[in-house]
Image (tube, rainbow, N blue to C red; front, side, top):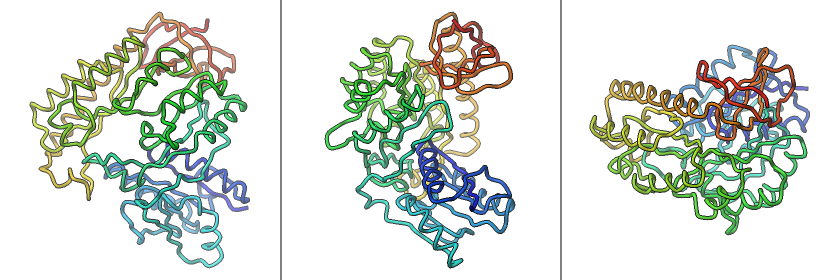
Length: 423
């Protein structure tokens, strides 16, 4: 039985797809192990969201070669799809539209010792793939419901890596979540490349969420990410009526001025963003709102950066993921005047400092609250997990509550985490 080690870079969608491929290979008599010199096959599921991600993807090939130079190397995913680099030092090269061919491609390579290349024109993809996960290694289950993006933000390569929007059938999603619940999981995270654009023959994301809430016994449902303009009135109503929906939205802002948002081809302006956030907080005053922000985008002057920073403070996000702008070939932003790299570093450091302050303030403002925590792991005497509003807590206990949801009191803020006690 050949031993296979997976190395997965990038987003939750990649993780989901790697898990699905692990199951597929297991069914075909391959043994999945941690990447090590014992591996006969390494599968690198790549990311291409930034130049750094591209570089890491290439570095992983060398790392695997060093672990076992006789092993077969499979490179797949977004870096392959966007670069079309068929000269990689790998035995099999697979694009995003061909991942489910892994078993046949491995058979051919093992039999012929010849390099296999499978890269479809992703922009012509019309159907959702058939990759499914039935087993999960972690305390919460990620369910991929959508692939592709039609937004074409001026900085983003992902539409070229993932192709147009395709959605998983709603009935399949429901059956998948029912199976997850029957396996003892209490939290599901709906994920995709552009999750808010989910549409199964007229069944939109809010319709799917309503079905999940009504047709399954799931205790907590979370969205990996959603654009502010895709939170419709129905989703607002569900947020108001049903506590199973997590008290947390990840709302990618990207930049806090109308000037840059327009250059980015983002589908909202700052007034729309702020007004919608105010509506959300009328329903859930203590909701956790996290975001992504790009610094150093073309044309971002010191004044525009400071204005963006001020807007972020006004919104009062619970946390910010900060990304220095990464120039991606074949995007509109790559043709715009670029901001100096040192300036990007300075702004990144400055905004990360604000991110840490906002997170600390949000955590401290929640002290003494009673919250429900999904416990995810143990480290020594402590269990670690997250509340519905995505506060990380640790509780000192000998009990084994992994995958379970328990009520706790948030007692104190210590070293970027909340120390809590069971109720």
